Amino acid sequence: MKCPRCVQRIHRAASSCPHCGFSLGDADGRYGSEEVRLRCLTDSAGILRRGERERVESAMERISQRFPQVFVAIYTGSLGEVSNLRQFGFWLLNRSAFEDLPPDKPNEAGILISIDPESKAAGMVFGYLLDPFLDESDTFDCLSRAHAYWLEGRYADGIVRALAHLENVLVKKSRHARRDPEHFQRKVLPPAMMGDLVRRIRDGHRAPARLPQPDEEVAP
Image (cartoon, rainbow, N blue to C red; front, top):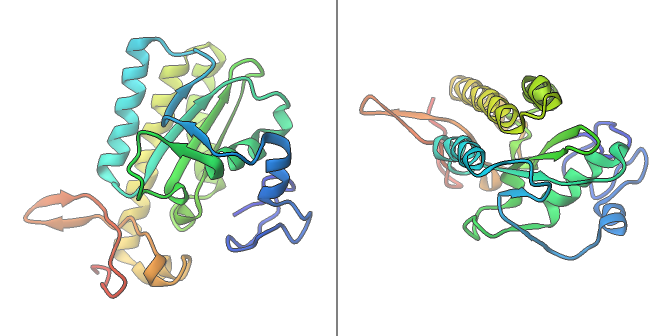
Protein backbone atom coordinates (compact mmCIF):
# COMPACT_ATOMS: atom_id res chain seq x y z
CA MET A 1 0.00 0.00 0.00
CA LYS A 2 0.97 3.65 -0.25
CA CYS A 3 1.05 6.19 2.54
CA PRO A 4 -2.04 8.46 2.36
CA ARG A 5 0.15 11.50 3.05
CA CYS A 6 3.52 11.15 1.31
CA VAL A 7 2.37 8.46 -1.18
CA GLN A 8 5.49 6.37 -0.57
CA ARG A 9 5.06 2.60 -0.60
CA ILE A 10 4.85 1.07 2.87
CA HIS A 11 4.17 -2.39 4.27
CA ARG A 12 0.48 -2.98 4.95
CA ALA A 13 1.24 -4.13 8.52
CA ALA A 14 3.12 -0.93 9.41
CA SER A 15 1.47 1.10 12.17
CA SER A 16 2.91 4.32 10.73
CA CYS A 17 4.71 5.44 7.58
CA PRO A 18 8.50 5.01 7.95
CA HIS A 19 9.01 7.93 5.53
CA CYS A 20 6.80 10.67 7.00
CA GLY A 21 5.43 9.15 10.21
CA PHE A 22 1.77 9.36 9.14
CA SER A 23 -0.62 7.07 11.02
CA LEU A 24 -4.33 6.62 11.60
CA GLY A 25 -3.87 8.76 14.71
CA ASP A 26 -2.91 11.71 12.49
CA ALA A 27 -6.10 11.25 10.49
CA ASP A 28 -8.08 10.96 13.73
CA GLY A 29 -6.63 14.28 14.82
CA ARG A 30 -8.02 15.93 11.69
CA TYR A 31 -11.36 14.16 11.29
CA GLY A 32 -12.11 12.63 14.71
CA SER A 33 -11.57 9.27 16.37
CA GLU A 34 -15.21 8.30 16.93
CA GLU A 35 -16.94 5.57 14.99
CA VAL A 36 -18.82 6.91 11.95
CA ARG A 37 -22.12 5.18 11.23
CA LEU A 38 -22.91 5.17 7.51
CA ARG A 39 -24.69 3.20 4.85
CA CYS A 40 -22.61 1.83 2.01
CA LEU A 41 -24.15 4.47 -0.24
CA THR A 42 -24.08 7.75 1.66
CA ASP A 43 -24.98 10.68 -0.57
CA SER A 44 -24.43 13.56 1.86
CA ALA A 45 -23.97 15.96 -1.06
CA GLY A 46 -27.36 15.04 -2.53
CA ILE A 47 -26.02 14.52 -6.05
CA LEU A 48 -28.07 11.38 -6.82
CA ARG A 49 -31.77 11.32 -7.59
CA ARG A 50 -33.86 8.36 -6.48
CA GLY A 51 -33.72 6.49 -9.77
CA GLU A 52 -29.98 7.13 -9.96
CA ARG A 53 -29.47 5.77 -6.45
CA GLU A 54 -31.11 2.54 -7.52
CA ARG A 55 -28.78 2.23 -10.53
CA VAL A 56 -25.72 2.84 -8.36
CA GLU A 57 -26.87 0.40 -5.68
CA SER A 58 -27.45 -2.26 -8.33
CA ALA A 59 -23.89 -1.82 -9.62
CA MET A 60 -22.55 -2.05 -6.05
CA GLU A 61 -24.62 -5.15 -5.34
CA ARG A 62 -23.44 -6.83 -8.52
CA ILE A 63 -19.85 -6.74 -7.26
CA SER A 64 -20.86 -8.05 -3.83
CA GLN A 65 -22.79 -10.91 -5.44
CA ARG A 66 -19.87 -11.97 -7.63
CA PHE A 67 -17.35 -11.54 -4.80
CA PRO A 68 -19.26 -11.97 -1.51
CA GLN A 69 -16.28 -11.23 0.73
CA VAL A 70 -15.81 -7.78 -0.86
CA PHE A 71 -18.00 -4.70 -0.55
CA VAL A 72 -18.12 -1.30 -2.21
CA ALA A 73 -18.98 1.92 -0.38
CA ILE A 74 -19.57 5.37 -1.84
CA TYR A 75 -19.52 8.64 0.06
CA THR A 76 -20.34 12.07 -1.37
CA GLY A 77 -19.92 15.33 0.47
CA SER A 78 -17.90 18.50 0.82
CA LEU A 79 -14.46 17.34 1.94
CA GLY A 80 -12.67 20.66 2.22
CA GLU A 81 -9.03 20.60 1.21
CA VAL A 82 -8.60 18.57 -1.98
CA SER A 83 -5.01 17.70 -1.04
CA ASN A 84 -6.33 15.64 1.89
CA LEU A 85 -8.84 13.58 -0.08
CA ARG A 86 -6.60 10.51 0.07
CA GLN A 87 -6.21 10.87 3.82
CA PHE A 88 -9.96 11.36 4.27
CA GLY A 89 -10.76 8.18 2.35
CA PHE A 90 -8.20 6.22 4.37
CA TRP A 91 -9.71 7.53 7.61
CA LEU A 92 -13.33 6.98 6.59
CA LEU A 93 -12.76 3.38 5.52
CA ASN A 94 -11.06 2.69 8.85
CA ARG A 95 -13.56 4.45 11.09
CA SER A 96 -16.88 3.63 9.42
CA ALA A 97 -19.42 1.21 10.80
CA PHE A 98 -21.57 0.36 7.79
CA GLU A 99 -25.12 -0.21 8.97
CA ASP A 100 -26.21 -2.23 5.95
CA LEU A 101 -23.37 -4.76 6.08
CA PRO A 102 -23.27 -7.97 8.14
CA PRO A 103 -21.14 -7.45 11.27
CA ASP A 104 -18.68 -10.15 10.24
CA LYS A 105 -17.66 -8.39 7.01
CA PRO A 106 -14.48 -6.41 7.81
CA ASN A 107 -13.66 -2.94 6.54
CA GLU A 108 -10.35 -4.39 5.37
CA ALA A 109 -12.34 -5.99 2.53
CA GLY A 110 -13.91 -2.69 1.48
CA ILE A 111 -13.46 -0.43 -1.54
CA LEU A 112 -14.45 3.18 -0.93
CA ILE A 113 -15.10 5.89 -3.51
CA SER A 114 -15.27 9.44 -2.13
CA ILE A 115 -16.66 12.24 -4.29
CA ASP A 116 -16.55 15.96 -3.50
CA PRO A 117 -18.73 17.67 -6.12
CA GLU A 118 -17.88 21.12 -4.78
CA SER A 119 -14.18 20.81 -5.54
CA LYS A 120 -14.76 18.34 -8.41
CA ALA A 121 -12.46 15.80 -6.79
CA ALA A 122 -12.77 12.07 -6.24
CA GLY A 123 -10.66 9.36 -4.68
CA MET A 124 -10.70 5.59 -4.29
CA VAL A 125 -9.14 3.54 -1.49
CA PHE A 126 -9.35 -0.11 -0.51
CA GLY A 127 -8.64 -2.29 2.51
CA TYR A 128 -5.48 -4.35 2.83
CA LEU A 129 -7.27 -7.63 2.06
CA LEU A 130 -7.54 -6.31 -1.50
CA ASP A 131 -3.80 -5.63 -1.76
CA PRO A 132 -3.13 -8.76 -3.84
CA PHE A 133 -5.86 -7.89 -6.31
CA LEU A 134 -5.83 -4.11 -6.70
CA ASP A 135 -3.20 -1.42 -6.99
CA GLU A 136 -3.07 2.32 -7.63
CA SER A 137 -3.11 1.90 -11.39
CA ASP A 138 -6.36 -0.07 -11.12
CA THR A 139 -8.09 2.57 -9.01
CA PHE A 140 -6.80 5.32 -11.32
CA ASP A 141 -8.27 3.49 -14.31
CA CYS A 142 -11.62 3.13 -12.53
CA LEU A 143 -11.79 6.83 -11.74
CA SER A 144 -10.65 7.70 -15.25
CA ARG A 145 -13.69 5.87 -16.65
CA ALA A 146 -15.91 8.20 -14.60
CA HIS A 147 -14.00 11.47 -15.02
CA ALA A 148 -15.76 12.85 -18.10
CA TYR A 149 -19.21 12.06 -16.70
CA TRP A 150 -18.47 13.71 -13.35
CA LEU A 151 -17.21 16.87 -15.05
CA GLU A 152 -20.64 17.12 -16.69
CA GLY A 153 -22.42 16.53 -13.38
CA ARG A 154 -23.55 13.03 -14.45
CA TYR A 155 -22.47 11.44 -11.19
CA ALA A 156 -24.54 8.26 -11.38
CA ASP A 157 -23.32 7.50 -14.91
CA GLY A 158 -19.72 8.00 -13.80
CA ILE A 159 -20.07 5.81 -10.72
CA VAL A 160 -21.66 3.00 -12.71
CA ARG A 161 -18.85 3.18 -15.29
CA ALA A 162 -16.21 3.11 -12.56
CA LEU A 163 -17.84 0.11 -10.86
CA ALA A 164 -18.18 -1.77 -14.14
CA HIS A 165 -14.47 -1.37 -14.74
CA LEU A 166 -13.73 -2.38 -11.14
CA GLU A 167 -15.74 -5.57 -11.63
CA ASN A 168 -13.77 -6.37 -14.79
CA VAL A 169 -10.48 -5.83 -12.94
CA LEU A 170 -11.53 -8.17 -10.11
CA VAL A 171 -12.64 -10.82 -12.58
CA LYS A 172 -9.30 -10.69 -14.41
CA LYS A 173 -7.28 -10.76 -11.20
CA SER A 174 -9.32 -13.65 -9.83
CA ARG A 175 -8.70 -15.65 -13.02
CA HIS A 176 -5.00 -14.96 -12.63
CA ALA A 177 -5.21 -16.11 -9.01
CA ARG A 178 -6.88 -19.32 -10.10
CA ARG A 179 -4.10 -20.02 -12.59
CA ASP A 180 -1.26 -19.01 -10.28
CA PRO A 181 -2.45 -19.06 -6.64
CA GLU A 182 1.08 -19.09 -5.23
CA HIS A 183 1.81 -15.71 -6.81
CA PHE A 184 -1.13 -14.21 -4.92
CA GLN A 185 -0.51 -16.08 -1.68
CA ARG A 186 2.95 -14.53 -1.47
CA LYS A 187 1.36 -11.07 -1.47
CA VAL A 188 -1.10 -11.59 1.37
CA LEU A 189 -1.12 -12.30 5.09
CA PRO A 190 -0.64 -15.86 6.43
CA PRO A 191 -3.19 -18.35 5.01
CA ALA A 192 -5.43 -18.24 8.10
CA MET A 193 -6.08 -14.54 7.43
CA MET A 194 -6.00 -14.62 3.66
CA GLY A 195 -8.97 -13.54 1.55
CA ASP A 196 -8.73 -14.65 -2.06
CA LEU A 197 -10.92 -13.86 -5.04
CA VAL A 198 -10.54 -17.19 -6.78
CA ARG A 199 -13.74 -17.95 -8.64
CA ARG A 200 -14.50 -21.63 -8.84
CA ILE A 201 -16.17 -23.55 -11.65
CA ARG A 202 -18.58 -26.23 -10.49
CA ASP A 203 -21.15 -28.17 -12.50
CA GLY A 204 -20.67 -25.78 -15.38
CA HIS A 205 -21.64 -22.73 -13.27
CA ARG A 206 -19.42 -20.01 -11.92
CA ALA A 207 -19.62 -20.07 -8.16
CA PRO A 208 -19.02 -16.83 -6.25
CA ALA A 209 -15.69 -16.37 -4.55
CA ARG A 210 -15.41 -17.03 -0.83
CA LEU A 211 -12.88 -16.97 1.95
CA PRO A 212 -10.95 -20.25 2.14
CA GLN A 213 -10.68 -22.04 5.47
CA PRO A 214 -7.22 -21.99 7.12
CA ASP A 215 -6.26 -25.48 5.92
CA GLU A 216 -8.06 -25.41 2.60
CA GLU A 217 -6.09 -25.58 -0.60
CA VAL A 218 -6.85 -23.08 -3.33
CA ALA A 219 -8.23 -24.83 -6.39
CA PRO A 220 -5.61 -25.05 -9.17
